[in-house]
Length: 415
Ligand code: HEM
Image 1 (spheres, helix red, strand yellow):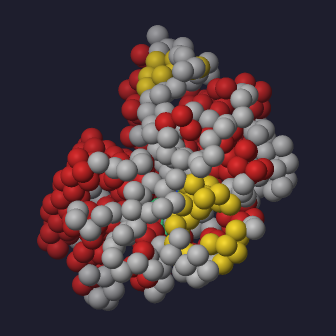
Image 2: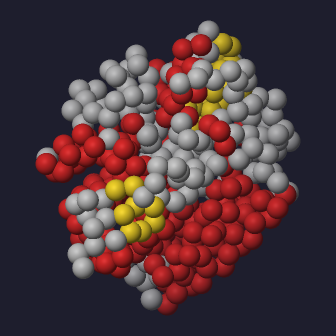
């Protein structure tokens, strides 16, 4: 394998996507707190942090946070340029972009719905959707794992929890990808990309306004009803926050799980020994899902702002600097995990940071784990000779939500 020669890393470049791990390895060893190229053209650079211990230090410290307005009053560096008002004000109401006390208020309202107990109640629905998706393709002998399975499964589950029509998923996907393109995926997004995100925001807002109006006439047992109640009874949320939270949960509820299922299958099909072990020991599935998140997680990078001058490694990070925490690298840190490039379902050390850590630790982690276990279990049981149709993969150009655009697989049809 050739050693990367890049001096200032730009993790948003397409050549990083097929194997980001070789870049991570190099920087972990040579420059673990690295001043690289920023995804935001208004910023001189971003600190990319590669080692597990340093990533955890940032995630667990209140000296770092998510609100650009605390360190910049010109709006520069905000996740979205102020010119795109609808999009920018909508995402500024997402809990993931807020610090306490707003973060605590927004998260407390939905926390209960995503508890392990509540997720147990959703399990039968996940199993039903999974079987139904496989029934549709079973006789074809092949499918695009992304379009036919890994995308519809989590989006149908979260749509069901919110109480919206899962049949509207093509719209959700189009809008979610437009938001993702503008906020997370590329270097220097063009005005066209922001215009698409603005239109997608409006699409989502109009959609959820109608749903909210319906809940007034006929309250349900769904998440939208719970949010509307929190607004009307407890005054805990305002109108914009109700809308933004619906959009946040719908998008966060599927963008990541798609890649957990797709990259999970890819890793297993590329490593027949691990696949065989899992087929013969299905009781290893929970450990396998955890290990797959560590080994090649759906979220490779998350961001923070420094609120104070602080030393990390041997570098002085200044108040106002932007920080990229390379979760994918931290999870392959040889100082934390023995033989980190090995897929090992019997790992003694399992505490990875694929779901983040600290106050923003993934709200949907129990749901994601349940969806992935059921999905992988069903695929392995129902498609005993599942295989890749080819090994050349078209990766989405996105280091935050990292995964293939499509994955063609074949299997023996029961016909
Ligand atoms: C936060 C990963 C599935 C909802 C996060 C964060 C990570 C993450 C790394 C932390 C972001 C940060 O600190 O900046 C994942 C992965 C998933 C997954 C790898 C699938 C394998 C889900 C699902 C939902 C969800 C199914 C369902 C609604 C959220 C929300 C937050 C979050 C709302 C923000 C929490 C907060 O700010 O307090 N997720 N996620 N995620 N996740 Fe997930």
